Image 1 (tube, rainbow, N blue to C red):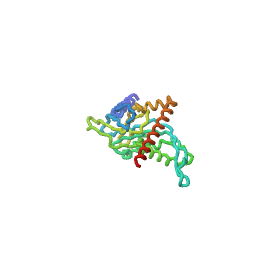
Image 2 (cartoon, rainbow, N blue to C red):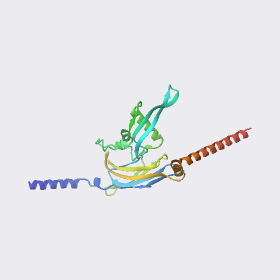
Image 3 (cartoon, rainbow, N blue to C red):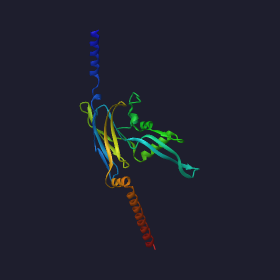
Image 4 (cartoon, rainbow, N blue to C red):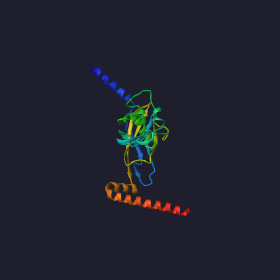
Length: 261
């Protein structure tokens, strides 16, 4: 009996030594910058993510914001003439930004095994669409989600970016990577997460996470503080600016009219 137990332990030790160790090694990434300043002239920026992975794997990065509830109005024509609000839509589990970066299209990275939990396709926009739910009395949920994705894509907030990853020549079973993620100009202040996944044959075998904070600076920060903390002063200032703008435009048109005679 003791001999059997000893042989069993020897067999288990052999299997453990035959198991690839890289899947259990800590996977770390670095990201620059770790904060984004949204100032007066902010028009989008880039962040650089780098790390090291096994040479037979691919890296896929997902830059995303926190998931929240989004309320929208569906508009449409009534009697084919008037545009009106037709339905109120409530979207659940919606990130304000969702950017996927990979060497090739996510749908082309599937492996021989289809695993619902680890299949790399679930990390793209197709996987995101499955996690979003819609509350509506009239609209088709699938159509509503498709329209939401069209809107977000038009704003540059939902994208699958390909070809923005570079690899070094493999050495000792590993290769380094650099991912250049283009951040859109419509980015809102808040905390964002960058996840980098290690993918082999369409399966996720590792993940690393870093956080990026975006905040207002300069005039946008001043106006935001004024609007939320000093609403009365903000309203007076906005009224003065609107009146001054109207007077300037009126003066320009009046001068142009007099000059035409």
